[in-house]
Length: 45
Length: 564
Image (cartoon, rainbow over the protein chains, first blue to last red):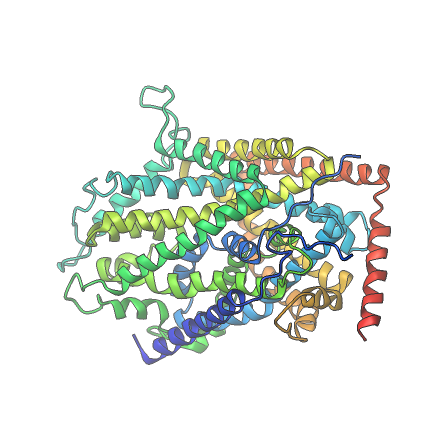
């Protein structure tokens, strides 16, 4: 494995892992919208 | 008029897993490592990431936006959605019908390959494949060093050819005396057909979403187990060039003897290979995401969902497959034995079984690996059937059961053709080229033109931003309009130049190729007829696409004014 190989591998894996972690964090910490969870909010009076 | 019950995804996570599942397939785990190693190693990643930014993300987001727009206007089929986006122009409904036709044709051979994965997993589970005794060391001619198990590689290659019926047509169901026999692969093909259509029958939430919610985490666990095994493998042979790092270098080193990074980057083949890999891997351009996202609610964050699904696909491809496939193969077999076997099927079904046989607890890891491929294949094939079901339900007003039945007939006929004409996998290859490559490129170009130049990128950005908790970059619109389409046209032009001429010659020379193309044309005519009937029925029922499109446009203008 050359230095160039290490740079390419770490760069590729780093970018994708970073993006994946950020997306997972955003999805898992998103506020649950009631309608999305399949519950209907009652109509306003 | 009978009103269909509107279906929706149950949760945001569900739709992300379903779309990611449709993208993650055999191409991620088997095609990507081979493509990187063959086309310049680390240098391949530069055009790969450029294609990711200029094609994968804009196209994926545009499909999510178009799909939700269509779903909000009451359409789930690509035929209806495309026509609506083209301001009611009927010819675009026929283009959209390709979004049902291409996936159902792809499902015909994908189900067959899915059955290979299941059959191999069962063979490992029962110990049949692990105890075949195929690992008879025989050294490469002219070498005396241990560990060059070319002989056993050939044994696996022969086993695979016989197992999938590549030696003779009809060998998958004919016994030695010419009678009928249910071979393991035929049994698995039937099981896969039933499983897929059962899950589709259960519906969007209870079938596809429920399955993907279990299958995708399971797939990730299986791949992490294999990755952990690959990273912790002891050196089997104390020889130069046979360590784990040598395996990584084989795949990732950007320079090779006599080849610099610039040589690779100035080679159009490397660009075509990288763009094709990302394009086919992300599953954009052929109506799957449009159909899936039409079931998304208006309040859902499609910008984040689209990005997460695309990035999950990349995670499986670059991080997991990039580390777990090639290094063990180099450690156990050596670069010389791996070099000529880097195409998808050779790597997956010849090289890796050979590696598992030599690996401690190889039977267990072999089972896990092929089971993970099977899960990846099922989540992909499910998404290929749903667009056809959606078109038949929506356009012909058939019930769900009838729509599933008609789609299942087409899938079954295609799979039976492949089961019979299994010799040299010629039929499978022909299917794959004309629908899985040529057809997808054709539809992707038209779809990108539709979204960028007719529906309009401001609409796309606005639709994406609705309900989004992340900010959609402003430059995605201009990229989609001015960069993605020309880039797709140039790369597709090169790709077609490289691949098409010989395929047209094959049609002229081979009767089987003509028969398969004839079958594909007949299927296309059926979907064309369905679209014609659909448009006629909508007209009779007063469902005027021009009016719906206009009303939607007016509503959009008012919304925009209010926001300003």
